[in-house]
Amino acid sequence: MEKIKKYLIFAFTVALLGEIYFYPINSSLRISAGIIALNLIILIADGVSGHYAAISSGIAVFILRSIVGIYFSGIPFSNVVQYNFPSIIYYFSYGFLVLLLGVRKYKENFLTVIFLFGLADSLSNVAEILIRERLVSFHMVQVFVITGLARSIAAYFVYILYKNQELYVLRREHQKRYGQLNILISDIQAEMFYLKKSMRDIEKVMSKSYKLYEKYKENEELQEDALDIAREVHEIKKDYHRVLNGFQSFLKGFENNGTITLKDMLSIIKDNTNRYLSEQGKKITIHFDFKDDFQLKKYYSLFTILNNLITNSIDACGDMGIIRVWEKTCEDSISFCVEDNGEGIEADILPYIFNPGFTTKYHDSGKPSTGIGLSHVRNIVDELQGSIDVKSDLKAGAAIEITIPKNSLLG
Image (tube, rainbow, N blue to C red; front, side):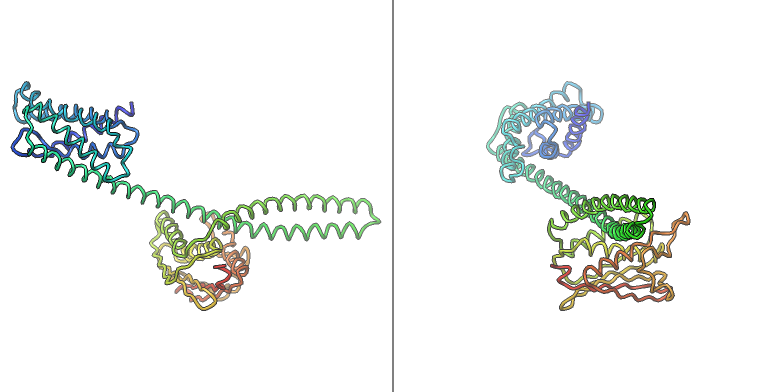
């Protein structure tokens, strides 16, 4: 049923465009734009038979032209049928020739498709004019060939535009998914930081439990309890170790997958940020000012840093504001800065903003934020042997600049 519906839609589209026409060389043959639409259907709609599409289009053209002739021109029914019937022959012939010539097999070859469509168009016109007037002149054939080639070129030009648009949409979708993947990796990296911290805490607890076991050898009951705690903590440590190794293997697989240019990474961040701002209804403008472009090796780390800093700036701006992200390259290092005109940071809390768990942000429910964003930024910058500089003016905004050695980012 769905396929029948498609054929009906295509057929009446061709029929409607068939009403855009002209009569060449003072003959009764009507040259219309409908065949351009039919050519496009044959090129684009792979699940539809070009042969059946042409037949159904011929029937639709005949019906529509007959209705127009009877109800709008007052022509007798018998005359309308006699006049419009040859158009069915055209479309039937066209469908047969397209099938015979196998046009679809060559649809990526411009010259071949133009030639085959033009040939099918010209021969179908000859078949129609033979039924209408029983006479074909050489001049008519010349007109048919020129018209056939012109309609074929027009159809293929539209087909190229369609394919380019389709590729553009696919690229945009790929970029969107790639951006989402980068955010996922960024979140996993943040969680890994706290998994590693938990691993260190677990090792301390296990060490203390074992020391307790060694200390109280004369008290067998306490010694056994201490040893049980050490064993259980050791099991927890092994589970954490497996999870951590799994995450590290996952990230290693992505990071060894290649590099990315700074320009491409910023494009992903920009698209994700603008999408988020649009979804949240925030009137915040974000500008990216990057004069250099280079291949990044540690791009997930830089992505995480910039993503967290931009998110903080968005929170600081509220519903309206301006954020600027810029980069500058020195001889041995690269600096990135995220600055905003938001609420700024109070001087008395400035020394604590990179502490794990520290936050001044609260959700609508009153629950405080996790406070791990900036601490995670500090952790990554330290791992990259970089530095952070914070400048803030209360009620006027803040700027956080990170400077990272080139060999840490570029490898």
